[in-house]
Image: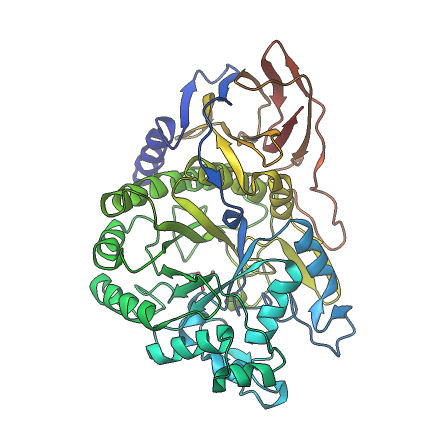
Length: 523
Ligand code: AHR
């Protein structure tokens, strides 16, 4: 009963969402979907930073995943895996959040600078109790984002280090002058100061970042933010925000710190089984009921973003403070046989659909959601890439990020959808989710997600204020709910050309295959 009520509550909110230039309505299950794309009512820009990634010192997220060291037999560029660099460059990763996560509030930056052989070995107490030899530190991280062409988003230790440690780390990274810390950076191999456009003031301060009350966290946020001074231009300070429906946290942080911060983080993970942490559900081989609950829980992101944004509006009606969804994605039971502390999970077409739904939600809230980071980039949770020794495979989620590249820095166009329901047992959800943008070159793109795993759904979109005579597209889908890529079969789920869409008389028509993510480019 609890589960049923929970899912239907989520449903009611989804079905009536006003959103930012977005409306979702539902119609009879057997019908097709209809929509109107309002090209004449341009909305906000969807910052490319919304497509950010999270890389924590967790399992093989860094070691083995990104960094193998210069002496590795795995092809590398000064220690960074070449295959991983190339794959991440191809999806235009705009920003990388590092070093945590829970790891951040136990991380002391001085452990990760200077000659690698002399760096201390610590225990990674959060993630498997394994040795952390600090081979990947500040200079290595900066070299990584530089090679990707991405921006740096550094999370400072608020939980177990004084504000002076954060201030000195920022000085080490950004000071252009001849200070001792700038000289130390030069001696470590980088004379020029780094840009740090984003600084996280702790992580999950209500939990692994220090078990704090919101009032105490707000006081610390103000204090740490004050003393962290960048020598290389604007550094946005992102407060440790709520998770899920912790609206009191948002209210308190905005009330007590709203004037001192540039962003507030939000964390929300999709788990299949009634949002439990102990028994979350398997990544592969799951029943359709868990497909449905995964979709229902994913759609709750819209409710959380809407309600946290409304609280932020109360204190910041001009929307200067970014909502930064810097941990999102699926979290399943660990892969059989893996270290449970490493959060290894496979990634299937279900994850592709989850990614599409979340990205559409962020597009609908592009006025407030200005940055995000999927958790996590390589080998951890809903990853882009999985590696095993020298092998690497791109996941279905990677391919969704590839499809959505035109959304980076594009203008969001409102799209109102009337969707049929997808029913499974007591769960009923709008089957179709959509978002649309006009890119910086003026081309219009439409993203369409059909979360129904069984039914192809016809869709017709009235194009208002958009002139198009032809359409091309790509689709990510699979033949089973858990279709996935493995090292042995790396191309089971990957984008293929989608030729089933047509434009005629101001209407875009198509039929969306079950469990699919489609991106259409109008010409
Ligand atoms: O992404 C894994 C963990 O989830 C992060 O370290 C923490 O911030 C969150 O609880």
